[in-house]
Length: 192
Image (cartoon, rainbow, N blue to C red; front, side, top):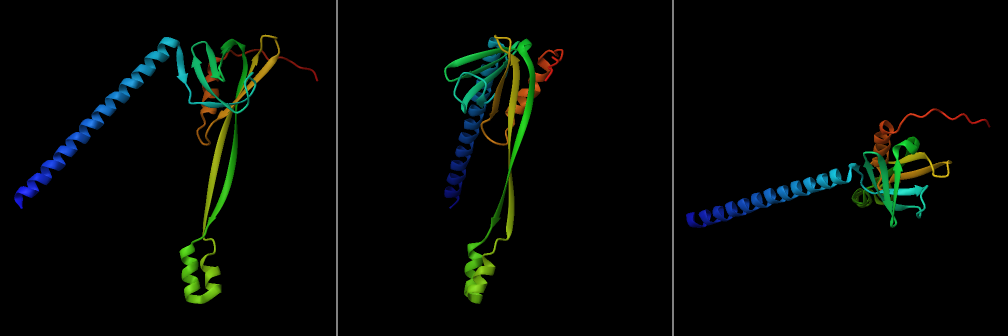
């Protein structure tokens, strides 16, 4: 009996040691990967690497294509659909963030309550028992980055990028980081 207990405890101890070693090794690997990415970013002059965003309009690539966005020391780089676009900060006229909210309401009803109500009180009990009782509200927030710039032709052009997934707000973060980097320009007066 004692021998079996000692064997079980030894086995559990070995499993625990193996798990700790595995976790430490995985942690070191993740640290090394982060260091490597940071080193690559530094070599390429990348200040911030964003998760994929969606191209809505403004570039010569199809709409709704995922693009990679890199904020570099002197420019914004957008890569997607086999092309790379570089936009110097001094060409940016304005950068704005827009947010859309999609609010959905759900009502939950319980089948178990309906069956119980039917068993106890018949059809009226079934209707009352399965009536929706719980109300849930889900809000999806999607942000857009609207970047206006002076194109090579001298006209003002606009690029619009959006988040891939709701509630991530990477496009808003891009605009927040772009604003201090773009020089303040004199406003152009337009007579309508």
